Figure 1 (spheres, rainbow, N blue to C red):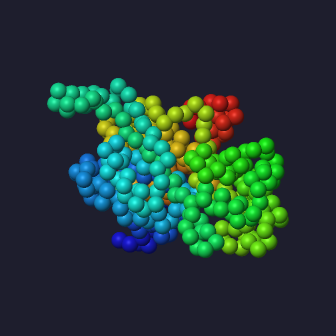
Figure 2 (cartoon, rainbow, N blue to C red):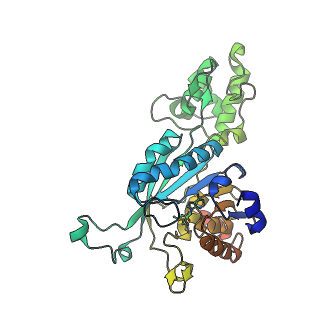
Figure 3 (cartoon, helix red, strand yellow):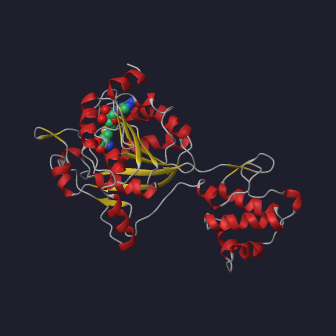
Length: 352
Ligand SMILES: C[S@@+](CC[C@H](N)C(=O)[O-])C[C@H]1O[C@@H](n2cnc3c(N)ncnc32)[C@H](O)[C@@H]1O
């Protein structure tokens, strides 16, 4: 069945959330540009169709997906890669090879409650494992120098200012700061900072007004139009941090009313906690942004996205999981968590 036929059969598309009942590879071309991609695919456990049952085969399983994500992502896109520590270690070189830059590794600590049945240390000869990881990657923006040479953002900002012939003090004057521009945005070392959008706009305006006329335009990534604050935001992945949250996420295995059941058994062994899905979506997107969830399962990412007023594009290849996910979405209230998150930001509440 091709994508069109599947769509005719009935494919969930309501209130900003799409769930495609089939192979996600058929969707990448059609989906809108993602601001966040949440990957929760193969672990090497052979539990769903085509999932390898050995860890060595996991990177190859991912590679074409990673290539597609790279083609469709922009410098604003964050990728969250869920897996076991070992699965991630195997796949990391492939992510890097296809342009994904490592930002941070978040440890999901499921706690002592997860040990039951997994604690025969005499046999395992290791400490009981109660963690998974959710690793954050971004696509770094690439720029061109005046002779077409490739530059990263730091090189480009420094080079543009230097081309203008202006002094470092003038950069501080342009930004209205004592020394932040020269010390942070124009430094060559690892103490470099991304110039905030308004400051970047101010530096670009100043350079184009006062810089050497021969080299104009300055700070124009397309060679013609100098960046303004809004453009500049697009050259970096979004990230909005809730104070007090670290990279160790203490969260039990999903249970209680959140766990989707079939009789008395879990419907999907990999169901992720909604609270963690909300955390990563909230950190890396704004309301209305597009989230991709290529390997949907019960589509926890889509549920969280809908609760936060984001749009989501998910796919699930197993009919039974697709059906369960659509039922879940149908009973999820749009924006139901968005208000709590806003209050959370203002009041310092962190339970989102
Ligand atoms: C680890 S589970 C995801 C669990 C999900 N995060 C949740 O909270 O329910 C991976 C899911 O991806 C699905 N899957 C695997 N390959 C796929 C593909 N090519 N296209 C769409 N879905 C796929 C599997 O059937 C499985 O349900």
